[in-house]
Length: 180
Ligand code: ZN
Image (spheres, rainbow, N blue to C red):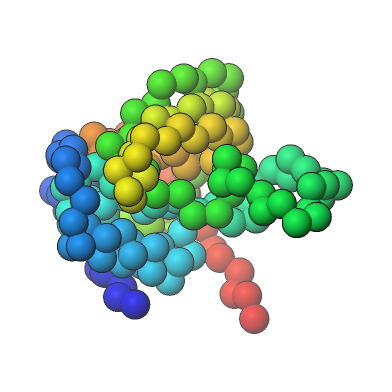
């Protein structure tokens, strides 16, 4: 487990275009593992490689149980493992491209690179992103609500775009409740 330093706004690395990943390597596997460790340690729902100073098109997302409940009955629990097409849990996206977006949602958004702050951002309410997974296999992930927002936010990072450039009105401070 290795926690990397999260770069904060003002660091020029956050405003650069990231390069495509052409080959998976042990080093990149390690980077991805560290990105998850770093994101979980900071209680984030997403992290992009430039946020730890690496200009490569890699993002990790885990919205945990903060997404909408799509299957409240908990059906299909007998034996068959649920397939990863359900969009929750850890998602690694390499060279992601948003291929479909529609709808609209406006809500508070924050970023681990802008600690303690949030601001109102309008995003699509539904996206489909095409990417490679850690085995460099092509995947498509569909997201609505918070997951759609997280995907858009992280894909923006790879183009050097910070959410603060999209905030409507002012950034405001947020105070997290301590969970004991
Ligand atoms: Zn961010």
